[in-house]
Length: 108
Image (cartoon, rainbow, N blue to C red; front, top):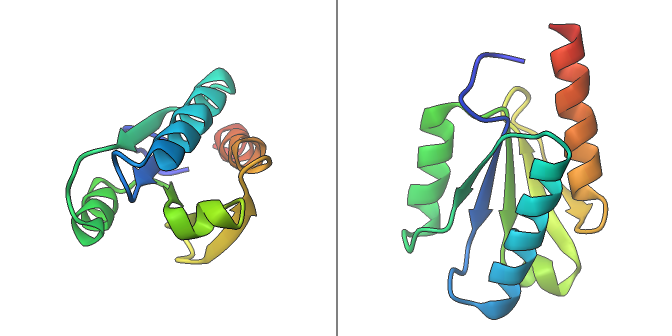
């Protein structure tokens, strides 16, 4: 895992939306409890600004939560190293990311 100030960037696409705010808060707490350092972007900026900021900082993983994905019970996960984006169940995403971070840290 490259040197980065945080392991994961969590992006809330609809700040102020009760469901998005709650899902982000829950996921943030789960990741922190698993020992994952999280940068939570809950600013009112446009999505493009948020994504650009995460890319500029160079965070290994980015999790995006918005109304559309929330309706499907999913979050979008981006692996910065490969550029691959995938959808993960909100119930499983914290565990999946924590396992990836731990594996990367154990490898280093």
